[in-house]
Length: 393
Image (cartoon, rainbow, N blue to C red; front, top):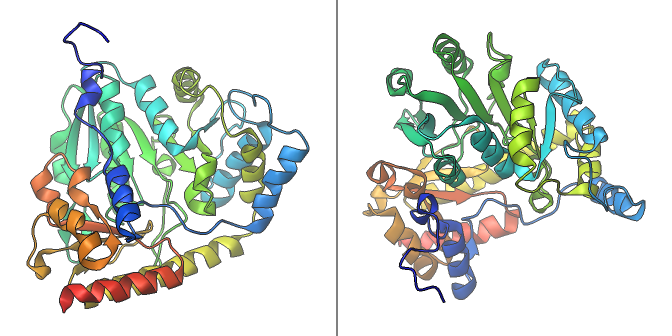
C-alpha cells in the first residue's frame, strides 16, 4: 500500500472511468434483459472464413509472432480491396498496416500524429475511445455536433470551419457515423476535403462501417478526394463487415510517411496480434460482392424491424443510413434524461440500450437520445420489440 496521496490512475484517463458498455452489459446479465446496447453480432460470420482461421491454426500460419506490419497476404488483400472498391491504389508493403482492431488503429494514429497541446476536431457524438485517445496524446478535443435535421443528423460545415484554429492539427472523421447512422454525402465530404487542404490539416477517418450502408447510400473514402491522399489515415476493420468482432483485425491505409508514423506508435501497443485470423481475413476480403449485398440486405431488414417496433413503442426514431445502430428520441415518451431512462429500461421493459449522452462533450445535446443495436438475430429483435410495447401501454 502506498503512502502517497497521489491517485493511481493517470489524470488524463481519470475522467473516463468505466465505460457505459460495461455498466449496461452488467445490467443485462443481472436482469435477464435483451442486450441491444453493445454493438456486436450474436451470430458468427461466414463459415468458410471461420474454417480458414482453423486451417491457418492447423497449418501453423500465424501461431507465432506475425510480421509487425501484418502478414503479407492480408496487406495485399487490403490493398486489393481499396483498389477494387474505390479505385485507391496502395502499396501493401509501405502503405498498409494491420492493427489489433480499429480501436488500436485509432489509438496508434492519434498517439503518433499529435503533440501535447494540439487540437483535434471530432464529430460529436463520437465513439468513446476517441476522447480517451486524444487525452492520452495530451491533445485537446474540439467537438463539432451533428444535429437532427429532417430525419437525420447533419454536419454543419460552417461550424466545422469555425472550430478550426491555428492550434488544430487533425480532423477526426467517422462515416458511416456511430452512433447516429449518418453517412456523409459526396458534397459534405468534398467540402471537408477542400477545407482540410486549405488549412493543411491531417485527417484520420474511421470507416469501419463502410459496407453497412442502406437505402442506396454511398460510402466514399475521404482519401479519394483531391488533395487528401497524402494527408489522410483511413481506418478499416474486419469485425463489422464479417461479424468476427472478437478476432480484432483492423488496418490503416495511408501514404508511406503516415503509415511509418502510426507503426512507430503501434509497435509499442500490441506489437502484433491476431496472427491466424489475419490469414482468414485475407480470404474474407476476397469474397464476392454477393456476400456484401446479402449482408447489407439482412441488416437493413433488421434495422427496419427494430425501427418499426421502436416507433410503435412511442419513441421518436431516426432511420440510419449506415452502421447497425438506431438512434431514438425519448421525449415523445415523456422522458428527457437518457441515463436515467437506460438504467431503468431493463426493469421496465427487459431491454438494454445506451444513452447517447456518453458520446458527447455537450451532454445536454445528447440527453434525450438513446441508441439501440440491431445486429442481432431476428427472433431476438422480435422479442425485444414485443417487450418494448409495454412502454406505450
